[in-house]
Amino acid sequence: MTQLPNFIQKNDDGMWLVEDEENMMKISYRIDEIVYQKQSPFQHVMVVQSPNFGRMLVLDGIVQTTSLDGHIYNEMITHVPLTIHPNPKRVLIIGGGDCGAAREVTKYKEVEEIDMVEIDALVVEACKLHLTDVSGNLSDPRVNFIFADGIEYIKAKKDYYDVVIIDSSDPIGPATQLFEKSFYNNVKEALKEDGLMVCQSQSPAFHMKVLHQTYRSIQELFPISKVYTAVVPTYPGGMWSFTLGSKKYSEVDLSKLAADTKYVSPALLSQCFALPAFLQKALAE
Image 1 (cartoon, rainbow, N blue to C red):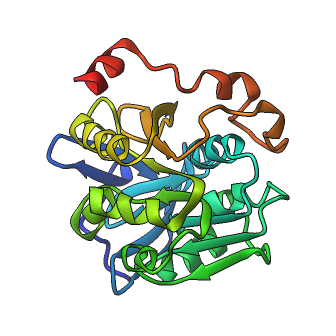
Image 2 (tube, rainbow, N blue to C red):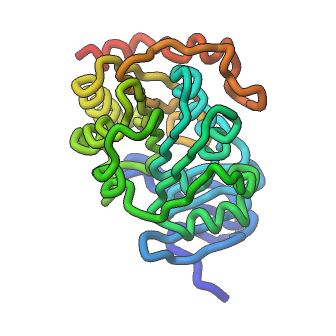
């Protein structure tokens, strides 16, 4: 029998995945079975079956996405920038190994090229096989899988992409570089003169320092910077933030929204940049 990782606990009450949020809190998820687990050169990759969240992708003991609500995050990180840019033909996704963001981008027929740079090929393999509710077993010919370090990859690109989507994991270990101003500056240089970018910027409730730093960096680099939020039940605190930096465009074109969405609607798009008072105040400080 394969040894259970230390974040999986088995007792008389069943099997539980216990996620330690930076010694701030512990979240326990009941799970029915471990569908897949393997150690890659970068991290421990696991897919588990949960009675409440369906299948869940877990990297190094941290839940990344689930069958229940993965579409919320993936729709918000993609449909917002793609309805703001009037003609997105070349799209880059950094991270996004669950393939959910790339799957959403393929819903836009005007997009001709989707480069997905993911450092860990094992995550893509696991999600395409075992987490199809999120990945859709992505096979669109416009998607170019590039298994490389996104931080290094972006340095070689200049004036190339219309939209860059940074679907990163939490800012822990090597991923902290994906939240640094120097990285965002390289993203800016990789964008065309009217390009725009978006990144996930953590929980406004528990990671305000990260959100504030991200917003300030992007605000200093781009003439247009905005924060928007969504409710993702799986993530700590429920509310999650995204930060957009644009060289030219700022308004959502509701007529461009792809029809096949489960969470994003025209009404939601039209108000997603409306922030609660506490967040407005924090970002203004």
